[in-house]
Image (cartoon, rainbow, N blue to C red):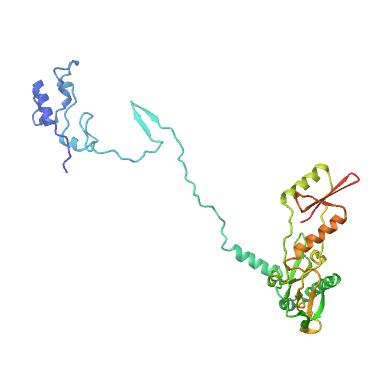
Length: 335
């Protein structure tokens, strides 16, 4: 394969003609270095003699770029340099000494995707553990009756019925007295109360009416009930801690059963505890869990009781009451 070399025949011939230098025998004139000839009209120092110049390279040496002398153009020098970026740690040789480029760590591109834990087995493991350790809470009366904890569920339902009886929540009336008024059904809702260690504390059952079957303007009108703001709770706790006040918490059991019901509402008897068969229905006298107006009735009942005790409701928050008596300040937050 022939090596491409620039055509220096004309330049070498003119330089040889000017200096009257005859190339050695067997060597063509184009292999003589062009640097031996100097222009006569240039004000430069005298050129050295031909003997002081390096020897001409042979054709075999010219084909090997590694053996070519410095004054001879090497093969492939005309090619464009590669655009690849050299590593920062590569040393650059200049003027006989090495200069090491500054070493900078490359900028690592971090993935934008959020790392998430493998959840392929978590649901299965959690479900298996709950199935073997936790008890199944029944969702209907039939499932509670078929449960192995049926005696405890029955005791919880009897306790709830006794509480409803003590509050005189309803009275039984014949179905024919409803005067074609829609009778709303009800259901039992079961739950288990546990302590801080996860042990079962007690079984709980609550009778809930199907409030979604109510009709606006017929068996309910107003449902609004104010809720205390979270900022008020934080401010009251901060105010009590700053002054060293005592903070107590109270819970009103079966709170919705304390309010009187104004609308005419009929309800079916609780499942499993029917008296005199399906011919009798419950005519509600008190608000019951599940009714749309129960929160509104409870708020009105509580507000009337607190005003009778001397507390004043603040206009900034309808869930905050205050009482100042004998130099003592009492703040009551209703949730």
